Length: 51
Image 1 (spheres, helix red, strand yellow):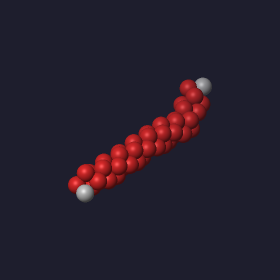
Image 2: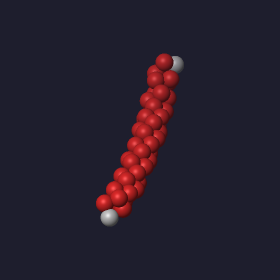
Image 3: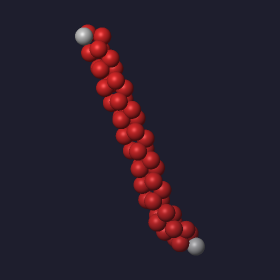
Image 4: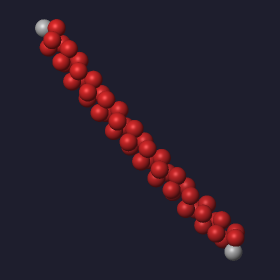
């Protein structure tokens, strides 16, 4: 019984880990994209101030 539960956990665990990892990567890329857009807007604003 214990070995069956352990196997089921081993089968289910990588999926859960991959799901958590994917969501973390998705949030990270989303955050980086927002930062990049803000930086582009900020640099454009700076250029307009300089001009």
